[in-house]
Length: 382
Image (cartoon, rainbow, N blue to C red; front, side, top):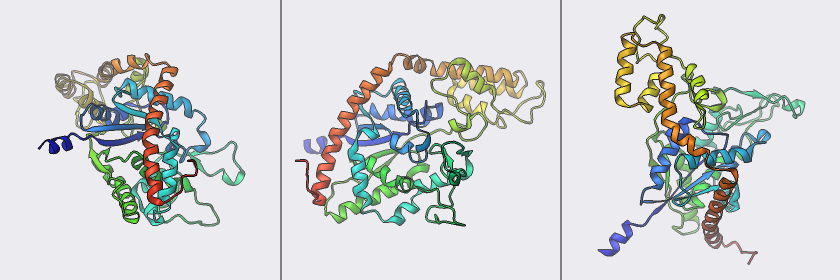
């Protein structure tokens, strides 16, 4: 009986990361950070949370001049939103060379067509067709001036994964690094023998390849060393951008976690309301309110939501007054987090990351030592 109880109390490793593309917005908080904080406070998990700087280079290699400052800002958001380095291992991906080594080793056993059909890669490619594209106009050869650059949400324009071929003599924009992105994601998880990966229900397919690679490794080397990563479904409310589309820094339709009260108001002021409400005296319809009322339902107390609905639909409140109150609601919601952001100096953040990197690398070294043994790779360093 005591053995069964001790078994049930064993913590499972949980791994998740975020790319450092600049200060995070409120969509990141609601969709990711808030869940991470709850998970780290659970007795069930050993949490490994990382800043995925290698992933940010996948499509942004030519413009990552602010990578270090972006890493610091993302870490500042992590800490301000409640991640605790005493409860979670917080680290930078590129500080753990074992992740890259495992990526290399796993690539040796991963069929090419697995990577080509993986939804992670396909989403990366599809994003290009629906995103704003920036043309490289400086520091490029003439033959490259039609190529695009951007964040992970602005992948280079190619057809479908698996259909990347040269046409009319033009080079494909799909890089080797992008093709290997799903294997690197798998390495991120398996380096720490991640048993759980927190995802939304619409992201479960992204883990299938990681499970396949883990199982293939175990089969080829007759072991059960790698766990089969399982999705840990988390609640991820949809937060629209101020224009009603997907919230993204690239579209300037986001509200930063770190925004000042004035910056928040300027973004809220741009929100699209009920387009059929022409005059201030016309009754509105909160079901037609494209953006603001969806924010009220996320950030406001029930009595504020009910009052807003009543006053809108009886024309007691105009859209601009509604936006002003919404800005106050958002500012109050993030007031404590924004104040906490100011408490961390760059030096303190770098110190916290350095400590987390050491903890993460210690675990990673254990994993790679066992992997080399299983693959019968000599340890030339010993």
